[in-house]
Length: 75
Image (cartoon, rainbow, N blue to C red; front, side, top):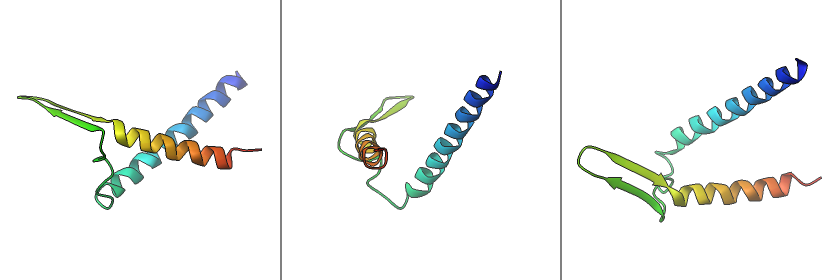
């Protein structure tokens, strides 16, 4: 049972971090105008619907996080 508790606490910490990142990204979206409008970000709009695929932004975030984890994750 203690293992399940540790897993749930870890999941809660991850959710808190992701929530903080989303709040930060929401507050930065007006201040960083190029975020979310990079080449490769697709926005398809039809009659009654639209879909946004942030491929370029996702790639940039992935590269930045990979570099950060590579530098700080070394032991």
